[in-house]
Length: 147
Image (tube, rainbow, N blue to C red; front, side):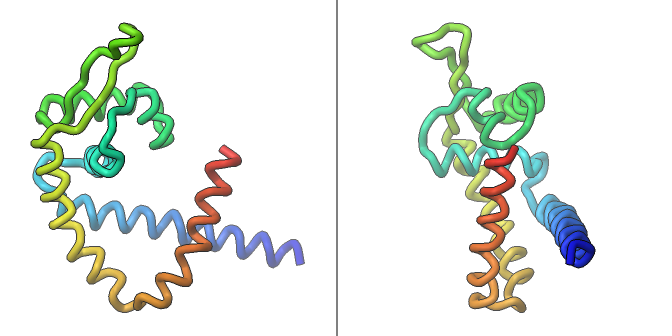
């Protein structure tokens, strides 16, 4: 039984990694010029929570190093998509908020991503997608808790 579980586990990981790579590639092709998936992810998160976050908090949320997040935030700030200000309570920290230009860029990206995603998953059907989501969510939460 152990060999079967190992084989299943390796197959699952292989499928997830390949699907992740293929999905990222397909989505990156339709993002607005100059926008990377990491940029979209940060903008989408900030728009969704409608609140400020520190670079350290964002790095933790996205499971990246602080250096990687700083690089993403620098590019977003140069593009005018975010505002970075000092934390009024702790001058050593900064706070990040989405700008109106960032909201517009995020909305444009969503408008370009939705048709690709809809076409991609249309064949699977809503019921199959609904049945897959709980398992994928549980796997993500388990990986996050173990990380």
